[in-house]
Image (cartoon, rainbow, N blue to C red; front, side, top):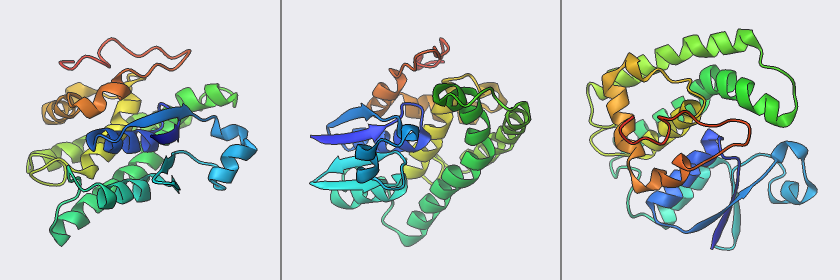
Length: 221
């Protein structure tokens, strides 16, 4: 069985978990306190980051290469289009969420509100929290613009781009930092994607000291 070293609220780990579940690859989840720099974990990934996936006798790190490996090795159901243009657009949006959204929103809200406490690094920086709360509005509006023109974020079918976005938003939704009333089309998209069987384990996550809001696991909000 595959083994994933992860942190429950990490968007990058959640993206990998969604891909594994969508492709019906059974996987044991192992919570890893990567910030403690355990020597055994550093031998698995000298970068000292999660996710790390043990699969097919290999140790895989970095969420996007992991997801693309899964796509190449286990192509059904497909999470990347066949056309070059479509694959480009998926990769562009995965980069958008894992880079721009992460730097402007996830790192400002999730890391300040949760990670600092879990890691014993002090209190949230209110300047960062305010910046993240402002930036997420722009990103939700951009998603709404895309979804007004497409069935899913990158086109007519669900792809890795949707999982990347949902991984970040679900982590923030766990701490009630997403205003779902800002856009009906984004809210409908999220309701649709979190109703998938692949989302079940994510909606069951519980982080000690941080109980999720009542709507978090509600498929109808």
